[in-house]
Image (cartoon, rainbow, N blue to C red; front, top):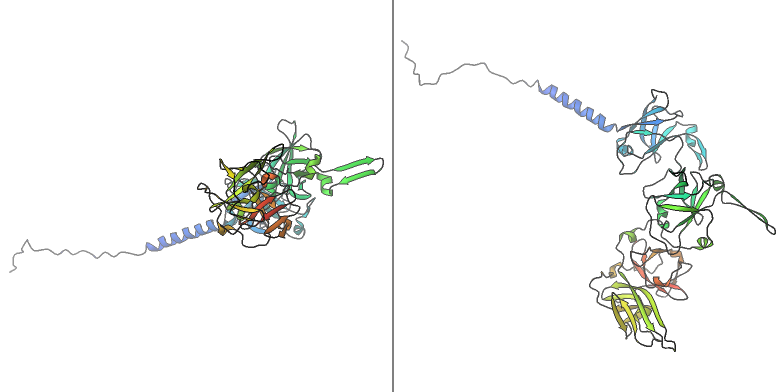
Length: 471
């Protein structure tokens, strides 16, 4: 007899066992692997661009795109446009050269080409043609479609740090793209384009000055035409023929000069007027402006120099008023400068007066220390940053230097070859034409920005005297 079931007891339920299958993992892994391969292929193949050209000049698929002599891409296909008017070059850039795909980039097919620059593309006589590129400005927008130049650009090495100018001329005067721009007979730039002005009243010359020579171009710089053939007939000397060069004879040339007291630097697009012949004084200008990279001295802070003026009345019968301008360099505890600016004047009727930082100081006693025309004047100047002794050049060797006063005046350059060693400094031989207002200027080394000394001027010579050892 079976015992009755207790309803409060748990009841067992039998169910089939469920097993999870791992088969779904395989297609997921395959899908991820395929996506990775696609991403790797796309990211590693670079950007594709199109270059439209008037003619192919024998270039084909597999030929290279080059920049600075190295391959930065490859032509994947060459086709005619649907209307048969031009050729399309399909180019795949290397991933590291994707920056070429930007506005302003210029392309051209390199082939044997004879010009005034010489024979270009000579290697393509026996080798394959290739596409060359000059990238646009670094901050230009992205662009994927370009039109190739039919001829190589006049100046392939146009760099963003250079300067582009517009020179207005009443006529063309035989000038053509490729004409040289000279400074003292040295080529410093190139004429990029010659075109009529928008109102056809003049000719506009688009000129390019290379980066090392940008500092030579100022607001008062003068340009004149020097190309072509000049004939001069005289009864005594006969026929005189002047030709600057074969290039100037064929495409013309320009020359520029900057006055000894140069104006402010100019920026891209500044406009100048072209003169047909130079004024006699232009040919005599010997302006010493820095060329090339200013290196550390252009990046370091300039010294604190303050303008001063010493005034007095002579003790003679006429009692004339006299004055002497100059500069003093702020150093710890006072100023460093020419002794004749901070010392009493021997022939003064009364005390000499020094105008300094809005204060008039009567010069009664000699400065605390003088040496070879240089003096230290003790003076409290809490608002000025003194030049530290750590930034004084320790080496007594001559070096290329800049003569500076304040930020309102362009520095003058003096090459080391112009510095002849003398006691406590150097004498400047055949250097810039300093006017009296440069008296007391600071001389900084171009390579390190260190203080070499103070410029002292008199009627006979210009000297750079090394600093005193009191500060």
